Image (cartoon, rainbow, N blue to C red; front, side, top):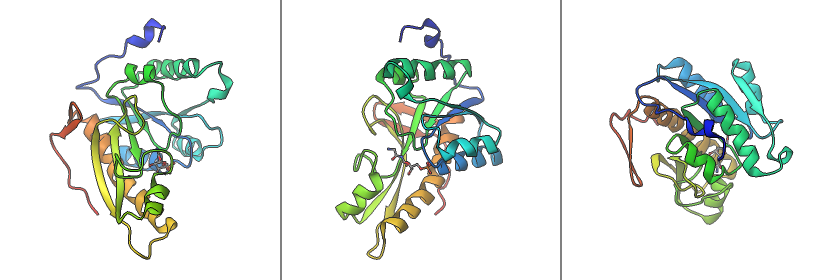
Amino acid sequence: MENKNLMKIEDNKNKRKRIAVFASGNGSNLQTLIEYTRLNDINGDILIVFSNNADAYALKRAEKNSIKTYCFSHRDFNSRKSFDIKILELMVENKIDLICLAGYMLLLSPEFIKEYQNRIINIHPSLLPSFKGVHGIKDAFDYGVKVTGVTVHFVDSKLDNGPIIIQKSVEILEDDTMETLEDKIHKTEHIIYPLAVEYFCKDLLEINGRKVSISERKKIEN
Ligand code: GAR
């Protein structure tokens, strides 16, 4: 990206983390992250919420919680690159240390990811690398797997591919429907996403190639 300012993202270790959440839809994960960061001292605060969708309920959730929101669509820009530069400028202006994708249904450009390398995390509703893409829950259900789950991972330039921080399995029982499975998946997301964010904010994550180690792990409640 050409703008020189964009290169000045400082090293974010040993400081309280400024978090941005990107969401395109309902925002139940955003809600959980807001509540968790306010109830627990995780060494980080959600400062802004960005959406590419003006109708996203996530924006309302942010407003109700007095969190600054930004919303614009890539359709209003000449190119995806100029759209991404605009978002990146917002991140730099707000001195954002960590970007959490929470149902953000647009791919970030490789240039954007490079600027925020190892500082963007995503939640995906399957046990990656199985069932990548935008229909993770349905694809697992239709395939007939007996076990699926949730993954929180760092974002790299390939779809749903980066190093995995936490995974938690979810059983698919014979009497499960898409609705009951979705419900189980979302409940599981709301358990592991806040934990992953907490580990990041407390500098407990170390990335070595594809492997992420967590130096002080909390017990995951069922
Ligand atoms: C979540 O299930 C999340 O895992 C999924 O979108 C949903 C957003 O729900 N993300 C993806 O599928 C990304 N590939 P929410 O808006 O209620 O947080």
